[in-house]
Length: 488
Image (cartoon, rainbow, N blue to C red; front, side):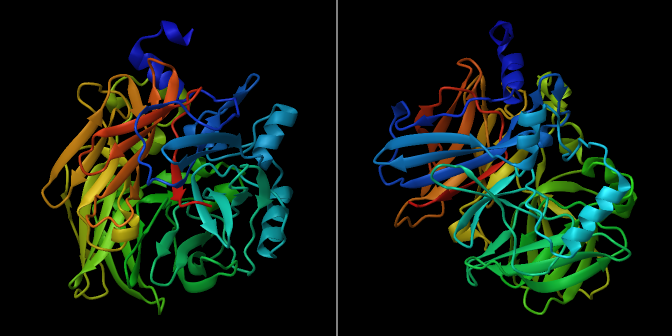
């Protein structure tokens, strides 16, 4: 049935169609050449199952998590994929019922909700796992999948089998976390935060050594109206929380049993608030305000003289969230049906007093972008020149039609484009002993609508030309984020 559709219709349909098969392949068929120096594994995470029987999730973000691993050795690629056997997955497969998620909610009694929250506040380890379909990190020698729930899911990096919930060895509590922790290379630690709802709402910023299970509180910031923040920024000395005016109404979640997305309120009159917190003292050293905007993803941030530079993939309103319902997504054959973001740079002058100062932004590219990456090992929290992203293509104006390399110093860009394809988030892997910032490769999982399969694409990061690709035996629904690690 899918094959009778037009190329554009088929592509967007497949991009949000469930993948039910789990396979293990030692050698994927290669077209072109994969650099022999590329050794290690690429882990990808994202939603891959959207329905069971007659029941179906409404929103892309609620699809059940699947982890993929691409292992590179001597120019060959091995592949394996597995669903995470989380509590929502187990419930769906055993009962045929959907579990609560980002937009979906199953009714529960007020008593059960309060009991669950009380157990969590007391540090009880319930063993419940969540639909962790957002990201992958390695912490305390364990690989884990993340979402915005504060409990990650541990999985085996070789077999991809699910090992269960991950709990920290401390009493820090929160209801809402961040799926994009920031890594501090100098201190070899992760920085993240959890939002705690209650009579006094707080952002609880913490650090945790990469080898540890115990978090240390950096700052507890009380807020009257907490905001939804999917990511945040960090420089050498500062943490920047960008409070977009997408306000979380906590009472409907706790007492009304609402899904997280149903508790969000877009209030653009509030504007956007930049909080600057010192990494070491935990003091809030400055606040800035700009016109209302929204961003899922920070690109990079760094200190430059007396300023902090914050780069975002930002829009005037949260269209990406509210236009990610599955039914309209599958029929979205025009780029305006699913708009991407602008490449914005905000400058925060630290010599200003701590009262709110107004800041604007400059555009670093004419491209509309999302899922941006940089050379993290070299440029994270530092000045940089190149970024890589998914983008629209005017000749294929539907969803994500191309990959782009953006030179932010010269405001120029290069593109990789192939008709009937839908690339996913790019990831930069540096070449060994490389000297230039863009000396390496770009990896992206690309959906080929014509062949109804996906392939792993390898681009030369400097020329942005294709080096090779490896086709999978199936399509992969559009994913979220991932991680590349050297040989395990």
